[in-house]
Image (cartoon, rainbow, N blue to C red):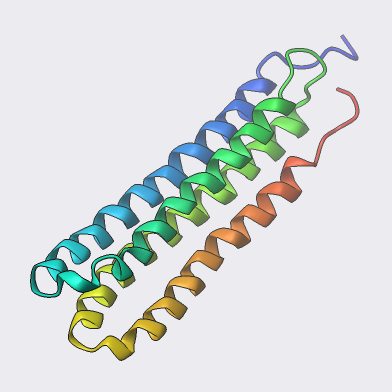
Length: 159
């Protein structure tokens, strides 16, 4: 049976694509919801700052796009024939790396965004500091995206 690829190998590739999207969207949803609560609370007292304060919600939404990009890349590489375990495991690792990195970044963006927009309403000079912290949180997801793209290119030539 040499040369026959295992029929279960594509399962791991598809799980990588699914976990990429699911975990990154969870991070985006949490970050948007948590920061959105802060924006709504702040908007009651300072409605003129609402548009300026939706930056954390926008940055959290970008996390879902990272997961979508990796999912599309991975699904395009999974084949029914000639897909070894090596490729399946590499694609699973790729999906998990961006998914979990985006989940962690979303949690960070949500917490920082909630506290940051409330603090910015009281002291507008804090906006730049909040924005820098949000950029560092978004960088965590970028690290996962870079690793995911590298891992998605790891394929075996044959079974």
